[in-house]
Structures are given as C-alpha cells and as structure tokens.
Amino acid sequence: MKRPGLFLVLMFAPFLLTACPPPSYLTVFNNTGETIEVRSGRDKDIIAGGRSDRFDFPTRDEVFRLSGGGCEYLYDFSAKLGDYYIDRTLLRGIQIQAENDFSINLLPASYKGDTPASADMILKQETFPLRPVSRKCASAPKP
Amino acid sequence: MKKFVLFFGLLLPPTVLASCTIWLPVTLFNNTGEAMGVNTGGDVATVAPNGLFQFRYPSGNLNWVVRLTGSGCEYLYDIPDLPRKYDWPVILVSSDRKGKIQVEKDFSINLLPPSYVGDGPAPAELFLMQEGFPLRPVSKKCG
Image (cartoon, rainbow over all chains, first blue to last red; front, side, top):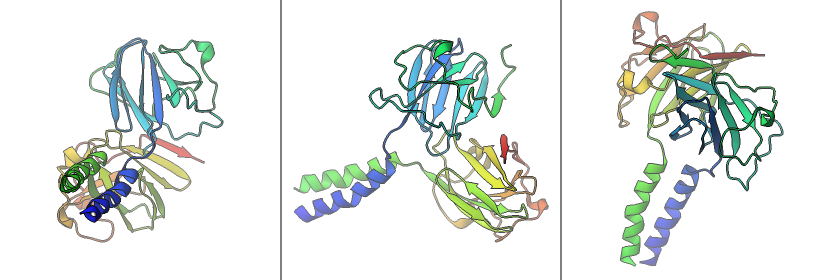
C-alpha cells in the first residue's frame, strides 16, 4: 500500500507546484482621501483612506484596478521599473501610492510606514506618476 | 496506510482545482490583414493574417486583459465581463460552444456567434451586436 501513496504524492506535487508560483506582492497606499477598492491578480480588497494593504502582484496580466468615487480605473503596469530594488525583508514587494486624482506614485521598497508617504519620499521614475488607461463610471464621478 | 492514500486521493484534487482558474476556450480570428502578436497573460503567440489563435479565458480572473501587437503598436483591451455577456459555458463542452472573437484592421474586436465553424475570419453580417462590441483598445503604445 506504500506505493499507491507515493504515487499519489508524486503525481499531484507537480500540479501544486506549477499551479502556485512563488508569491510576489504589490503594496498599495491609499492617499486618495476616500475608501478605495483594489483588484490586483486574484486579490480584491478595500482600503480605507490613509491606510495601506498588500496584494498579489499582477504577474500574468500586468494590470491592476482601483475603484473609488463611483469610477473604476484600469492601470497598465507593464512598464519596466529599472533598478527598483525589492526589500525582501519587508515582504511588501513593489510599493505604490494612489493619490487623490487617481494617479499612482512609486514609493521606495524600503518605506516602512503603514500610512501614505509624504511627497518627498516619492520616487521619480520615467513611467510615474502612472495614469489610468481607462476609467469607467457607473454614475457621474465626484467633482 | 489506507487512510493516508484516501487522504491524498480526496484532499489533493480539490486543492489543485481550487488553486487554478477555470478556463474557457476562446478562438481569435485575425482579420487585420497582417501578422499580429497576441498576449493573453499566459499565452503568447503570433497569428498569421486570416489565421486563428486559440486560448483560454480565465473566468475567475477579475483583471483579465488582452494585448495585441501589430504595425509597431501594442493595444490593450479590457474585457472583464465578456463571459457573462456572451453566456459562455462554465463547463468545457463541445467545440461549437467555444467563444469566438475577431480582430479587424483598425484593431477593434468583434464578437462572433459560438456556432461559427469557419477556419478563417467571418463576414461582417455574422457579427453579434452586443453591448461593448465592437471592443476598442483602452490604450495604444507605438514605437
């Protein structure tokens, strides 16, 4: 009976390993001043104003969505981040901050705060601040 | 040992299934008149003019997008609600139930009837007129 057990373990282990790639993260700081919903990879969660949360990094599709103020914003995150260094001790991955105009700023991976960073912490990269590629509003957006 | 085998036999299949997305088959026809690149996140391919490409639509993925490339430009499409609108099957069944879409010269995307059986692009009279179609790219990057 040992062999069937071993067979099952060996047969299913590759499926599990290929189905679940190693985690990589996207940490979002909400500086919009209102509650937003974030969808990245298979993750979806709500972040209160002035707070942050960690999500799956959108490895497959390289996009993420923010919803707030009655609108949904789609961001193309396929741009290269150059020499952006991921701080593996923090387990936060790439850190970004949503501003009140729904532009996205890049924060240093070493930023340890749990609330939005001040303007002087924001990194100046070619593709940032990132603007949404689309905006869908269910009703008229807030002014 | 029997319990051990039973444990793996019963526990692992649901784990594997839960860790993967349920995929729906889609056929994309290239009616652009030129070779076109397709990137669906998991599948990347080049489709010849009048050729077709089959891929899997991740119905469980909230962020799904498609990228097409042609004439030196990359087009990003946002189609998160396609299965619901198209009434695609949840279970993979016969080929006549597959989703079918067609990319036109201007890189708009038309929806074809699931019953279309041709191996090349379909004539315009077959296009389904559904809300959201023809689908336009949300962004275009050239150069």
